[in-house]
Image 1: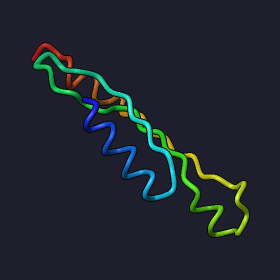
Image 2: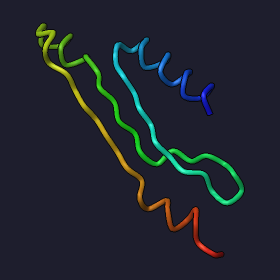
Image 3: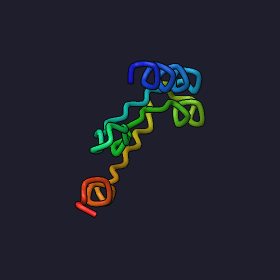
Amino acid sequence: MMNGWKSAVEEAEQRHGLRIGYGVYDRAGRFHEIVDLGVFDWVAQLTSNRRHRFVASAIGLQLLPVLFSGS
């Protein structure tokens, strides 16, 4: 969904960072984001060093069996 992706990027830019998400479509065609990655500059602001960045990521592998199980 380009609109969802665009709004997430715009939201991240307002926080002075970058956010990327990856996901899968279930059998019903609904999109589920299972990977999230973000780069934020709040550490640079805190330390007054513009080279410092905070990178956060998460992956929800536990969702895959729930989304694609036969039941």
